Image 1 (cartoon, rainbow, N blue to C red):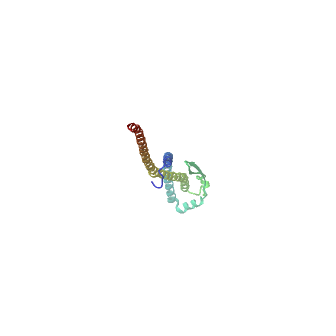
Image 2: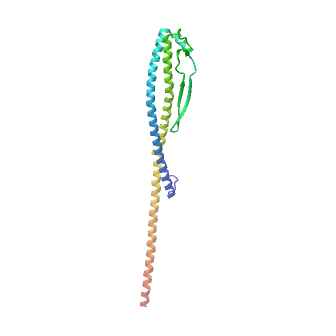
Image 3: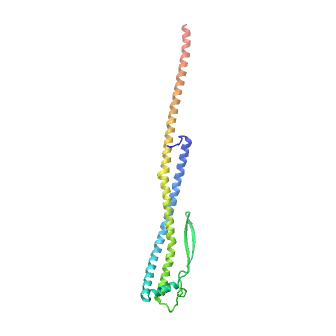
Length: 226
């Protein structure tokens, strides 16, 4: 017990800190449970969306391979260059258990053939199909990206909350409880010493009173003998 005066005030203060820390552990565990539930819900959603992304990716990869085999890489690259554009993406955020999580709103990712900058009739249907399936894959990829980042943010917060719980349960609370035990032991020893001292004082007073009474009773007897 370092530099802690063993007083009743400090004893009460440490007990108050224990109560506060215990309440804090309860609140943090509640937050962690809620975050874990949120994490699991979003993880299931992401798993479903990733499966869809993989399906779209396989279709897009196959379409691109067929278009390259049929029309050649130069025509495919030319169509890709003609279709370059900026995506209309807006970012929005939401607060979940104090965390700022992001999401995106998409517009115009999927285009019709006339919007891709290539001729409808002078471009192979294989190239059009490759462009369409690639845009479907891109759309799903953009929808997965913020959800994956949100899972990272929630997972990091779960780790942070868990570290705080461990610090309270494994370090602070044991330390405070040990200090309470040591202060209480010193106070009990002082109380026993005070009780023993009071008994000795009372015993001395009783002995003195008894001696005075005995002396007072013996004096008349001595006078009668004289």
